[in-house]
Image 1 (tube, helix red, strand yellow):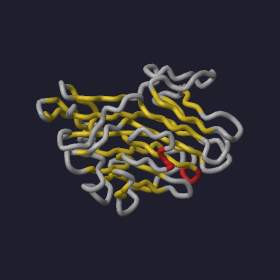
Image 2 (tube, one colour):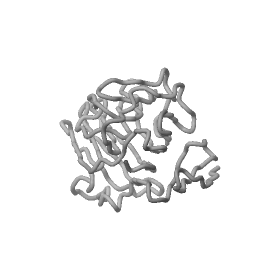
Image 3 (tube, helix red, strand yellow):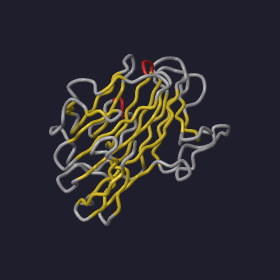
Amino acid sequence: MADVVGQRKNGNLVYIDRGSHLKRVVGAIGPDVIWYEFLPWVHNIQDEDATGTDPEGFVTTVVEAGTGTSEVDQSNSIGILAQIVTAAGENDGINLQLVGPHFEFTSNQPLVYMGFEADINDVDQTDLFVGIALEDTTLLGGVSDGVYLESLDEAATTFGVTEKDSSETTTSSSIATISDDTFHFYEFFFDGSSVYFFVDGAEGGTIHTTNIPDDVVLTPSIHFLTGEAVAQTLDIRQWRCIQIGRT
């Protein structure tokens, strides 16, 4: 059950849902706040029964070598903001990065949070990357800088990663085993020096203090691919990134 309370952070008001854990940020207000919220009407995402262009406001890289198209659609289901659909060729899918990097992981940012809730139809046959990363058109191919969670083809496990200059620190073990057709909540929280990862409210096994990308400006990012010659889907229920600290 949700239990939202307000806390002050460097003169800004931060809303925490302590019904889940004490690092789940659901909103913030103040002069030092940067807040991104994924909303289909903001990005002019097409209706699932229509054809159209890629979402506005993103740098979008589409791979669709197989049958069909890789696209982001609005959903007609209540509570689902959008659905990513892949074409039916192995490694077909979509790489999405918000235009304009604004997020940093330095001691000047006492808080950086990302929360992403989504449902994958087949977790063993898909790759998912979600986080805040350097601009890259193939994030799963080896982004150089970012803080992110990933679940890779042929496994249902999820790991948290901090990466700086192509050097990674990965959670020592899987944070969680995820299931098909089930909504899971992927999160991380940065407190100015350390990164904490969560899946479904459970904290990952390691707290990261190394390979945090503290010398680049990053942007909210998703990469979703099918791992076989079958079209796959990712339903997005919520996605938000919140930072306190602008310099």
